[in-house]
Image (cartoon, rainbow, N blue to C red; front, side, top):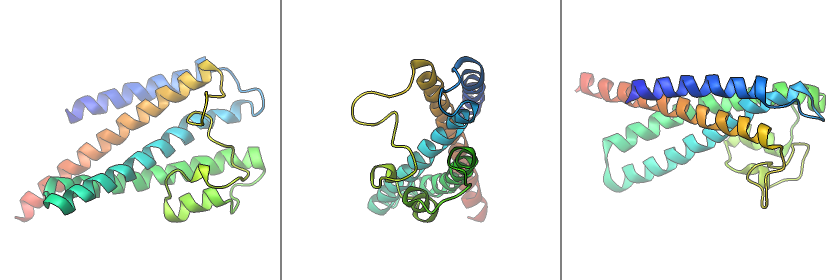
Length: 179
């Protein structure tokens, strides 16, 4: 199963790169710099997903003392930190040409960087653009751009699942060796 996840993630990443760079049109306002969205948004989604899994797996562990739930929470937390770091780095790269600065102490950026707060994009009105896909009502982007974004979200979600599966397996093996 892990090998299949790895292959699916690789195929998804390749499809996402093709859609993001070859099929999706150049965005009218930001031009080609907007294409970093195909990395930034999926890594943010996966970071939020990872910490959601940590929450649920931790609750399961506390309720049932199941070692598998503890390993899942541990692995998901590690992978979530990696994806959060990628989100912040990609955002900084996108922010420089868009806002003129690599970093601003914007409330949304700061909350993600310090607290890894989920869904903070709804809390403050700042430089950071509002949500474009999950906003109440309809998506505000052209269908080709939305399709490329969603393919990348699926691809990065598969990559997350692959990383977590590998890490859970390593944690299980480590526990067996130490026992």
